[in-house]
Length: 191
Ligand SMILES: Nc1ncnc2c1ncn2[C@@H]1O[C@H](COP(=O)(O)OP(=O)(O)O)[C@@H](O)[C@H]1O
Ligand SMILES: [Mg+2]
Image: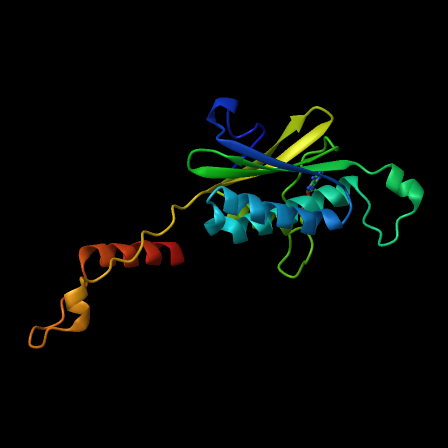
């Protein structure tokens, strides 16, 4: 699912973290580091892998379109560099990763052949995000992806002390309902 507007209203926002970078290749690794810290601060570390993959694709695209990808850019090229803003927006049970750049051209999902290496970035974003899209901003656009935040697993229930020591004749008790619920939640996530 895609959209042409921000996927939230201001009153729904619980937190925003933002990093502004110049559009060079190092923006990709810098955004990953920034998001890792931001996600752990906001108790959203469980979705870190997907957020980092998505951010890498979106920032790579922003740099490709508005920045300098040369290894040794000239001073003149550097003077014309655009800015890229990476934002993590926290909603009630989801986060939105946004990458703002200075081009007003919207991203275009490509239909690629099986062997093509190019044109897969947005397909990956579509695969990992609950929904994604882009919207116009003053001076450019933002490309965004929204992911559900999974609550952390409940702690494993502890057996009472005397059962752990073993009381002799009695058969060991079967798994409790809390333990089975824990397994079910874990399996649901793995599928
Ligand atoms: N931030 C962006 N600004 C403008 N166009 C974009 C942006 N991101 C992606 N696009 C367009 O969408 C196309 C598909 O992007 P993607 O799926 O990442 O594949 P690739 O980057 O390999 O071309 C790009 O080739 C480009 O034309
Ligand atoms: Mg790409």
